[in-house]
Length: 198
Image 1 (cartoon, rainbow, N blue to C red):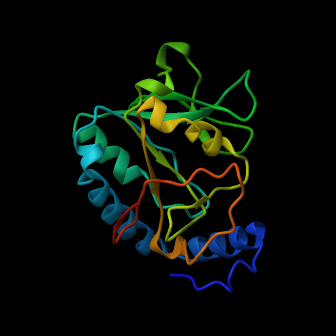
Image 2 (cartoon, rainbow, N blue to C red; image 1 turned 135 degrees about the vertical axis):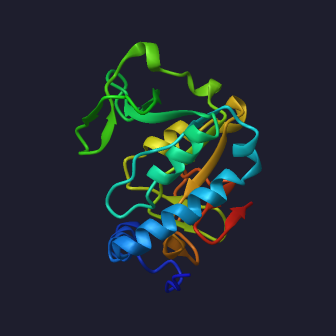
C-alpha cells in the first residue's frame, strides 16, 4: 500500500504518482498480474452468477484486461465495452464486444468498439460493471482519470441493480484519498492479490 501524507497530496499529484508506478511495471509483471487478477475476478460471486459484464480495454499501464475478457468469453459471458456517447458529452454507452468486433480510437486515444446501435445494451441490463481507476483507498473510494465518466455512470448503480467492481494493480491502493461530493465509492475492487469488499 502507498503511504500518503494524510490528504496532503492533490488528486492530480496522486494520479501522476500512481500512473508512474503502474507504468514502471515490467511486461512480465503486467502479464502475470493480468492473469492473476482475471482468475480472481472469475471467482468473484457476482461475476460467477452473471450473464453480462462490462469491462474496459486497458492502456497507460492499467491492469491488462485482455486475459479477463478472454476468460469471460470462455465462461459464456456476454462482454460489453464502454464507448463515449456521441450526443451526450461526458457519458458512456456500453456495446457488445466479441472477437470479431471492429475497434476505433476515440478522442481520448482509447480503443472502443465502432458505434452500432444494434450492439448497445442499456445500463440497467448490465449485471457487472468492471471499472478502471487510477487509485483506490481502504474505504472503497475511487480516483479516476478526472473525466467523471464512471462517476456519472455509477450515480444510480443500486437503482439499476448493477454490481460495480474496480479492477486495479495492488500498487494502486493508497491509504486515504481526498474525496469530492461527486465521487462514487465502489463496493468492491479486484486486484491480483485480493478481492476488496465494502
